[in-house]
Image 1 (cartoon, rainbow, N blue to C red):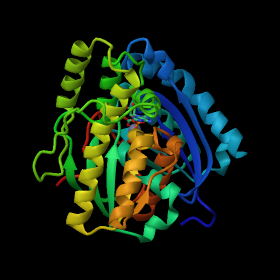
Image 2: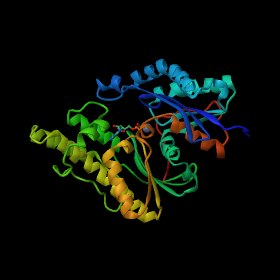
Image 3: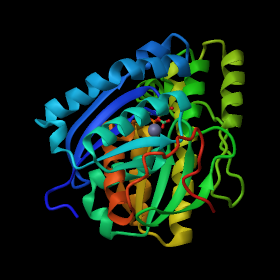
Length: 339
Ligand code: KG4
Ligand code: ZN
């Protein structure tokens, strides 16, 4: 169908990053512009949906132009468009989806709606393009809203092996940070502070949930709240942060080890904002070494929300699926995979 190298424009506005990217053949990132609104939401301690939508409206067109400029392209050089249409903040998603539909209509280009978590999964294919011939893969998805272990048997083929029963790992980082008095977004701040602390100082609980590959992080939040109230600032904050991070990291790492043993899958990937965590990376590297597994973790900029991963996912979707009809919908929630 296409006789030239396919350039896909990806658009991502599901939460508080306005991002546009151009990816060639699903793997070469020609531009990846990310305008973060984190500063704006920091004063509220979390993302305010209405503020996020308005900022996306303001920033999307300049971000799109910047992506084209930095790739040295114009809209005429594009072959297809991909946009996050689920799950996420509905108003925020609609900004990207409306823009993508208008562009697709005006430029007469095929458009695909991409599941945000599938985008995160495909950030691994940007990091390691040979994964296309390495199925089945085991994927640990750890974002602000989701925590799951998924088996990927081929493009678009996912089976859920385990998921969180309450808070997501990123949410645990953010809520823990707030209880420690650190600013939003908490994950990167805990990461930084933890690097100077003793992870064994405070024995925060781990929820193992028997043999299950499910997760639970809400008890941890309560534990840190109780600890902070009782400790009254005696324990160095870096030690508390390091211990808190260790409790999250240990459960994620051990469940992934268990999933690899149970399924016999030898290639494991990590996706989502929490994959940028240095403590998690170190623990997973040690685990993969011990188990003889191949481990892929994208560079931090491709772990947190970005449009390059959406363009990559869109590219592969167009390889096995027709473009979407322009009437496609936008959804606040939708699982990536079922058991
Ligand atoms: O994937 P993502 O950018 O957005 C969602 O799809 O949710 O993930 C955002 C989450 C936030 O909870 C943020 O605190 C966390 O990822 N995060 C981190 C780090 N960087 C981002 N958590 C721990 N360590 C980090 N370095
Ligand atoms: Zn995300």
